[in-house]
Image 1 (tube, helix red, strand yellow):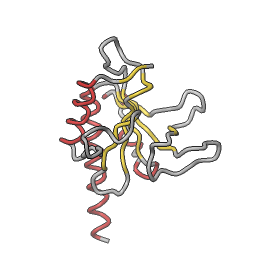
Image 2: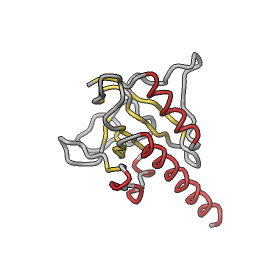
Image 3: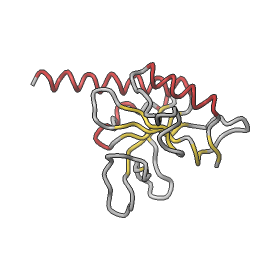
Image 4: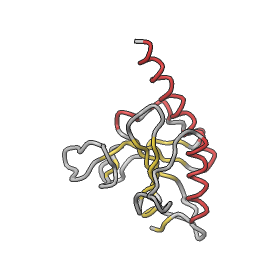
Length: 150
């Protein structure tokens, strides 16, 4: 298990920002957390996380896949598109789509877990990552518009 390279980190942040997910950074510009990149979700008070440490990478720090985790209320199963390299992130040990981390601010705890858990997507490359961010932003906007009309 390694960590993503600085260049990959920058690319992930650029993709997220372009899709409407601004990064949450400390005042010195560093990441809020060591193991996860944290982003504000548009049209939601929840956050989105991309794991940057403890992941399998190639020799230059490019992840074999990205782990994108959202609050369980924000998870959209219809955004899973294996033909476009967006998969459900299933925990190998529990066989569930629950990813625990003490970093997941505002996420619920589930029975059997001592830290908050989110639901996630496994994304195989940058193109799929951009597709997921764009689709998720559109879904959040659509839901926000529907709420405003009611």
